[in-house]
Length: 217
Image (cartoon, rainbow, N blue to C red):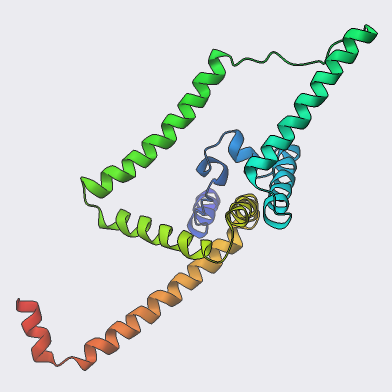
């Protein structure tokens, strides 16, 4: 009797509450680790680099072409004079790495590019062949939002904001997932309730004869 009561009591009160795996949703690889700050040094370096990029091209007024040319000019000058002085003073040459790409690196880059291209082609296929209205609306609204935001901000600012959002929203959601899901569920219930109230109010104003004719058609 006692064993039967102990076996039945805990299972009836507990409800499964599965949590979404944010790391798996982001791909589960090194990119997910970086976006979720699991590789903190790399994440800090990317955010710092993005901040420097935004400041140089948006605030300081540099153009991308002139910046790249100046950086390459400085790098080539340093390497050239280092190599010349090393030859004259009998010192070691600049410690340059092996400047060539391996087959594995090229294959990995090609595989990543292929996946992105296939995603774009799948969206194009849904738009043109399947004529998927949902995909069309998602693409249309997304492009319109980007165009609208781009009218207020420069391209470096948009890129910088996108990088900051990518490094903050997933990490914050993973940390406060239970609270966010609870708030989103409550908001969804309120929206559904308001929609039903409005829908019921609109239907109540339509004469019953008109509703019957609409159903029969």
